[in-house]
Length: 304
Image 1 (spheres, one colour):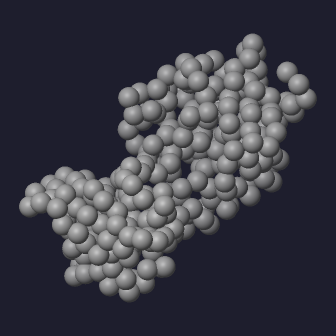
Image 2 (tube, helix red, strand yellow):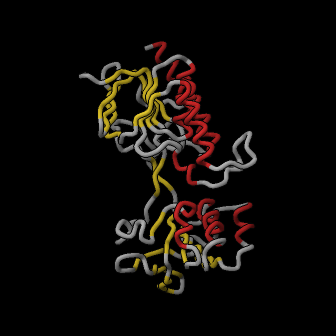
């Protein structure tokens, strides 16, 4: 196998699912490593207000995840911030190959989350950080008093449009269907803003500009039209980040097939959080997955 350091459980991803799994595994006395490609916390660190997590009336994503990370750290969970290139099942163990060293584990928990889905248009990558963004709360302040657009019709899109309406001159909310998917409080709040213009049954077909985004072209029921904008916030969903392992059973959208026991089709390999096939993807369900995946991994190790 080589000189890879051996762990009882390696967890891939340091979001709420991965961190919760690590806490449960360490409390059971196991040697645990979390491998994370960027920073701990996952996507929720970009949320300024969380109001639906038990015990908090209101907490920012970064504060919640900082506390969870420190809890895991105090328990003795080890962390490396490397990109996972490959996870390979050997006879009785797993090899985890990263861009800065390899590791060996008796069990693996995948909690690598999802990544922003792109539109797939020309110039999209070129204009990233130059007018194209995937997080309104992260980058919205850069466009204070500017004209911006939000692409999407779900909760994230509508919440982002509300956030931007407070700081931007004008906000276009563009959705491909004839009604928004989001319901409840965000949609009601959206009605309070006079500077939000909703464009339904429309898709973005072109991103225009020289060195940065200057306008977007829409396909609408009335034909194509171009909107001058300083920024576009793309919020059309997410896709699972699991391209580093072969042999996993996935659904048509690429999510790992696993039930409430978080077991995959590969013995010893468990999954937690947003990358699992499930109906509700929320902080609280991701934390629940982490606890279940760790418990199942512990039972697997006992019988291994």
